[in-house]
Image (tube, rainbow, N blue to C red):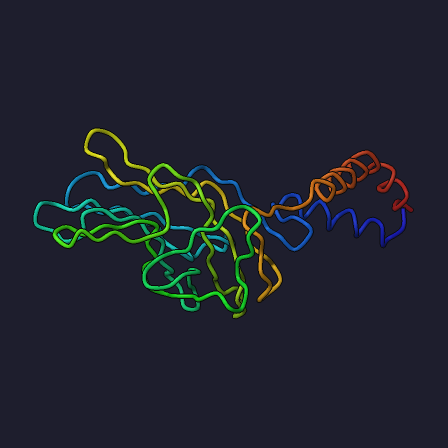
Amino acid sequence: MSTMRVATVAATLGLLRAGTVSGAIVYHDPPDITAMSPGPGISEEALLDLDRDGVPDFRIGAFLGSATTVLVRGVWVEPVRPGGAYIGEDLEAWRFDAGQAIGDPGQPRSSDEGFFYGDRRFFHLQWGQWSWGEVHFAGVQFERAGAPHVAWLRVQIDEVGPNLLPGVTVLDFAWEDQPGVPIAAGAVPAPGSLAAMALWAGLAAGRGRRVSGECRP
């Protein structure tokens, strides 16, 4: 086997081990990441590390108000690193359906809290494009090596139990590894790309001994 082919197989195996995928989209399906208010007057948050560099990029949160608070319930996403933003405006994280473009230049971005849903006592106000029990996509932008990257988050918001405790869950997510390039909501690597990588992995495993033999003097 030529040196170039050995290097190609080794690089492919490295991609498989790292969980990186071909086709410019990096997809992750971790255990569900959930924040749920445990009771009145208490908020709960959870952190999201989109590119797995050990530093959180966003937080999600849920809050249930007490009898004296103005905010009755709210679930949101918020960037925690410089350069981070959600797609939306006026404290509302936009709701995307599968296939919709996320990160187009004309879409507004905000670094404040982006509510999926919220309501206020006394004023009878509600805001947010989401409804309880729904699953949709949210769009976010984060910086990696100083360059902006766009991602989708598949999000579910719920009211749980007799006290209707608000909760928000990120089910999975993906980001575009080309800076500044939009991503379609729900887009994942093509199955053919994964199959090709698996084939290369099989070739490397099956021919490993022969490669070692060829290299012996």
